[in-house]
Length: 252
Ligand code: 13P
Image 1 (cartoon, helix red, strand yellow):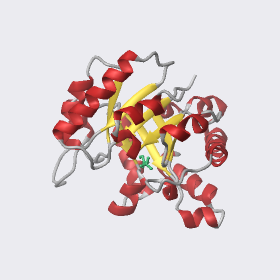
Image 2: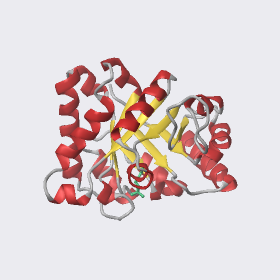
Image 3: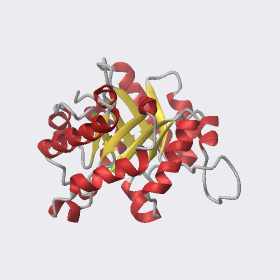
Image 4: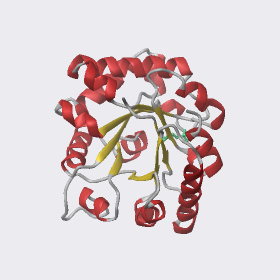
């Protein structure tokens, strides 16, 4: 059975003390709650990963990095490798976020290498993709998403998908307050699952968790998560407030 997951992408927010404080608040709330198997992940910036990993140790909250380089070490100024992440207790990485694609020129080809490096290091990957507004308006959203998934992931063996979570994040819904409707999310998630099934078969497609991201808030989470192919959310803005984030976790 695929897992329900709520992950908070803190992006470039929260200094050390704010990160520790928020992590501790989330841990406390998760500990108190009786979650029905929902997995909770938080993703602080690189410099705060070690502290947040410590703050969440022995809890049910996992920590993810927001990015990673595909090489193990060497002359790559400013970059961080999978081994380095693992050395501070981080076993999950978000790859392919639209902000990485848009502002840092990350391509499907580069992302394929990052995915390979993460999996080779036995890390879990939350792989993000999604169309821009123009694609949606010209009805190309399915084609765009299909090619993002194929180009970055379809060289993998079926077994690799045990360690991959997909996150559909329509770019027009990120940080805009405009959410895909629950029906739009469901339609796309069903399409993504079919794309996986066509390549790898139903068994693989049924087991992969597909998260929705883009202006998920306490007020809309329950309806979005109620859709059969939506297995949780990747949360930006609302993940910066423990009450809001936890209300979304609790929406399952
Ligand atoms: P918002 O929830 O702020 O729209 O951000 C979504 C996102 O980009 C998560 O990765």
